[in-house]
Amino acid sequence: MKTSWLFSTFILAFTALNSLAQDESSTETITPKYSNEFLSIGVGADALGQANAVVAQSGSASSGYWNPAGLTKVNKWLEVDLMHSEYFAGIAKYDYLGLAHTIDSKSAIGFTAIRFAVDDIPNTTQLIDNNGNIDYDNISMFTAADYGFLLSYARKMKPVGLSLGGTFKVIHRKVGDFAKSWGFGLDFGLQYETANHWQFGLMARDVSSTFNAWVFTLDNETQDVFINTGNDIPENGIELTLPRIILAGYKKFDIGQKGFHASTELDIDITTDGRRNSIVRSGIVSIDPHLGVQIGFKDYVSLRTGVSNIQYIKTFDNTEKLNLQPNIGVGLHFKNFYLDYAFTDIGDASVALYSHVVSLRIKLNNPKGE
Image (cartoon, rainbow, N blue to C red; front, side, top):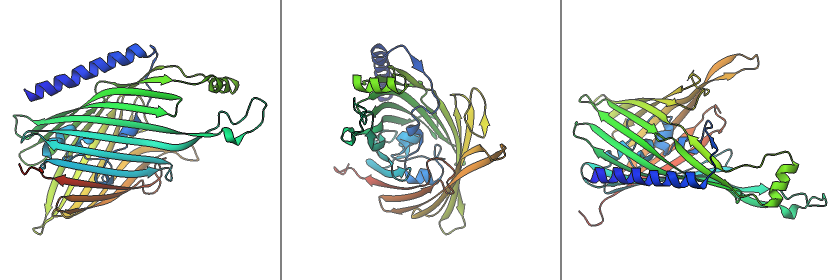
């Protein structure tokens, strides 16, 4: 009964907000590549250290982002997950908060908040006054920020080892006082563990084709600058994010009899927004695999590495060569505290440059002792 009620609430809320956004926006609809791409960066240093190959194994507060079905593995009254990282030499800030709460032995809920922003951007549209003079006092600052808020629900199903989960997400993007958008979408996740402890996962991101309804509010002076400099005046419209399917397989192995273990996971991202620069590419879909490996001692310490961003790049002689992005990480666990660190993009394989990522996860018992 609870499952049906929550699922119906997600659907009704999404349908109502979708209709509202379409009524308030123009009929122009665009479907660009890499729409809402800030939601594809990843959360948690433990996942980033494994090149984001965690869809099948995810089972913590970060599951609201990676695979909502994994929330059923949360074994405490509340889990809190925090992360901070910076990109482009500290210009862009990326922050994440994840919460997970067990409802009963079969179900759990989660909440995820993400902010990716560049602060203190100079606005030079009024740098030159009406007389053609440069006036630095006319320079102001603004922030370009992307926000994502995810509400997730997961439940164990009757087939032993099967869990299903869903996420309703609200997206808010803002560029100073010039433009803003609200977007809504749905994700669906599945995890299944076999009798011999193989784990498989499926994550359908933006299964509803997530949209952002953009509204532009340029004043007359800014519009004049756009026209005089040969730029188009942006128009209100809807930006669609097409579905992405992630298939994953995970296996953990014991090493000897002294508490050492190793695990590996392979994830395959299938995007549907056309040809991307990935290892398998076509005009309709592109396929991007990424692999993560972890070696640990009991549940105290873990060493991680992973490979992602496998793509072809052009060399100076106009030929293509295969390039990839390695990541490494380490995790420490003491009682109900998890501290993780990841060093991403070793060798500067991506445009985001390298980044140090730190995250903290805390498990809390019920304060009432229940």
